Image 1 (cartoon, rainbow over the protein chains, first blue to last red):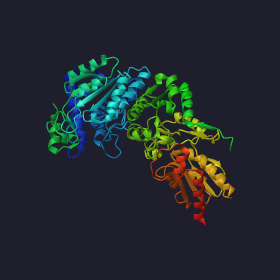
Image 2: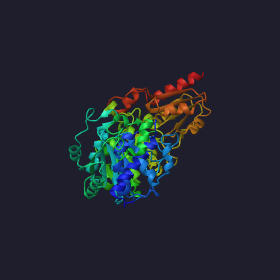
Image 3: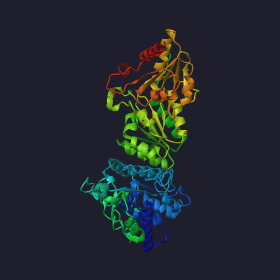
Image 4: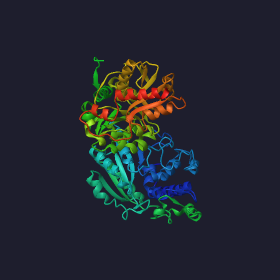
Amino acid sequence: MNELTVEQLQQKAAQLRRDVAAMIGPGRTGHLGGACSLADIVTVLYYKLMRHRPEEPRWPERDRFILSKGHGALIQYAALGDMGYYPKEEQKTLKDLGSRLQGHPDMLKLPGVEANTGSLGQGLSIAAGLAAGLRLDGKDSRVFCCVGDGEMAEGQIWEAAMAAAAFGLDNLIAIVDINGLQATGSIRERFDTRPYQPKWEAFGWHTIELDGHDIQAIIDAFEKAFQVKGNPVALLAKTVKGKGFAFAENNAAFHNGTMTQEQFDMAMAGGAQ
Amino acid sequence: MSNLIYSNQRQAYGEELLALGAKNPNIVVCDADLSKSTMTYPFSQKYPERFFEMGIAEANMTGFAAGLSLAGKIAVTNSFAVFSAGRSYDQIRQGIAIGKLNVKINGSSAGLSDFGDGATHQSVEDIAIMRAIPNMTVLVPADSPQLRRMVHWMMDHAGPVYLRICRNNLPEICPADVDPVRPAVMMEGSDLALVACGVMVYPAMQAARALREEGVSCRVINVPCLKPFPDEEVARLCRGVKGVVTAEEHSIIGGLTSAVAWALRGSGLPLEAVAIMDMFGQSAQNVEELMAHYHLTDRDIVQKAKAVLASRS
């Protein structure tokens, strides 16, 4: 899987976006926007950079992906299902009573999910502890933690940021999904969590800014991050909420939105470019 | 009872942590700048690589411990009970309990035991908070010997555990050879059952002795595990008596009394309680003064016992 070209990864990301839309379905509500802003990053991680074994989800040497912004779960579900962590047919059971595909990720239910997240602000602490624990055992596994830009209003993010820097956790990489929108609208018009780069730098992190939808730029940013020693790294990824579906792009209504049949058909027809 | 030995649960906890740390390299300890009070300090000095000073940031400490457990560690968090159960409630609920992670949570200086520091530092509701979370185990040791065995039990037990630790010296009352988490009959009796936990077990025994002088025979039951609550065992141990008095250094809401009332449903047994009646604590110059103020003494247990008996006649 490491051999996928940039073009193939782009196609994969588009497919995963369609899988997300299909999981939600027409007339039903789901967190489409924040899943799509992450699609390219998640694709690069799962299909190119992360060391993991879909046939052995608890492989001890694996890299870990912690989705601190747990409402982005659908894009992780799409990748996990596509890679064979669970049967892809199960995707149509999303949020059904008894389904392994919960509204937010559940580590005891779905193989490949590493932690229970969704109460925002907590995933980075978990990721930092996980990175510290892996380092104690001398493992070279990396921990990737995806944080939302709205989520950065949670104070615990900054407690975790301080701790990760204090402990020099260079096996921890945070990806900040800067899509500019939270549930009720524009972040800067509500509770402005900016500026990002000076804040993370001040908290002792190495930062790398990038376009979170440029596959090559994402790969390059991670490769640079892997070279950093002694500090955790924050990838500050500029993204578009709802990316790939014209009706959802930069539209806060699709933070947790409902597609009409027409919108759904558009999405299935390859609305993702 | 002049030959009683008094010892400190915090001290005993620190010693057991150190001893277990030597045996089990998988034990990792986190503290939030209270290590000299929670007594994790000796562990921090002996095993610095397995000790994380998390700063004054309990929420992050708790999430961090969840991560350590995901890496296969037995992670132990340490702070005062008000903070362990209060400040970290959501981190315990979301990050630890839903996933049944192997994190041990030390609620130190619990109840009113931090007598000088006042309401902000006195946990009157920590047991209720922890009991309300699915998948949690809640342990309340009555003395240091029980605590020592509980610490071992807790490290062998897979899953989240909340351990409530008293700040002050307590008389050693628990026999060495009993299961540290099962209900235990401390004194035999037939008229009333006095069901107590933690620091209230000894006052319950004193109350039983005083009542014996007045011709009332009391069975004193120490219930160290508040969750999962041994409903059937407690109901069985209360069988044959005329009434029950509970005693806990905790709010009347959500602690031992609530659990006992549910366990005894349908039994028809009259029930009275010695507990904190839905109030916050306050500062005092010593803990005895506070316990008297909130009616948490052996004399209060005697009074409630008489009230239960009176309700039967």
